[in-house]
Length: 263
Length: 234
Image (tube, rainbow over all chains, first blue to last red; front, side, top):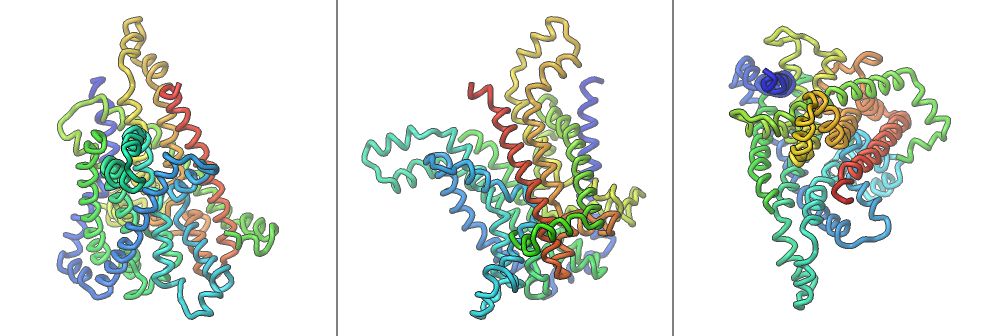
């Protein structure tokens, strides 16, 4: 009895909070009609929304991967003044509301912001267009790669790197042949998390994009659009597609975990 | 962020003392605290079961815990709304109430405490517990005197992360809360509404407060991490 108590509490909680709602996606699509959900998914504006989401991810993920690795190397291998501050700032997007991120960009590039007038004067639109959405997405997905790579680098130690250097390897050679192979699983794990965050971002993008259908609407904004226009089939259809991506992410994460632990 | 200074300190004060903003902030902090507390209890139980218990399908349960990190939050909101909304198959209709906000925040913050308590619990040496038991300690004494003190820093840093996440959350809340001023409007939704209706200054004032909360929590988490690893470093 003692043994089954915690188990049933834990699994019951999981059922009420997580698994129950998740099961609803199929139930609702069935109830709303699979055909309706499918036609909403293949609508031109929806396809465009998925394209926008993919473009944002395609820009933000590589940028943050490179930035994350460089940042982690700097934090672990090269102690410098203000290191703690950099470390804290990398983590900031995890604790900060995405709305606050979006708002900062909104104010910075708005009509009365620091950079807004200059860009408007040169005929470049930042707000309510792709550039601001890219900035927002990049900002919120900054921490993931760095946070995965930092502990791995720490555990690794730098003995192998020092050995390589004493044997005459250059900095680049050491990085490519010694450091990178050892941290690659951590990087991949970070990339998976970054991708998930980019695809699912809502708050920051909602503030700066203006949610214009067929132009600046992302997949997550499209869900809201459908829901508010009482097209529930559409909302659940896109949700199913996004949940499918999440499931793939989850499987990759699960497969990578033991690898990471072994590394 | 500096835009909040555009109208000086008095402007900042004016906006953060607006009744609607105050109500939104109070609701946000109260709900988030409740969510963090719930996570502290159930997150620990979940971590405990995942480390010490063994049953079929444990790996699947372990994998599912991470789902809220992978799933777009707006989808989470929609799904909680489907189960606990007007067309609920279990006849629990709490949509557009504070209970709904609480439920959806539990969904999106579920992994934090589990994932911070789990590794600490895993590393915990069972010899200490056996020693206590052999000296005649009750199970409860073993838990409160041996296990809990060891895993508490881990739990607390997870709790702080869950709290931070709950305070800033918007995507999952926007559909389910109905966003009624003074009732179910949280701070992040208030900020979004103000910025969309052209009140950048007011939005920035409340945003600065949220930013301050985030910084405080980051410092707390940093401190707790150091506390959690103090044995290893010593």
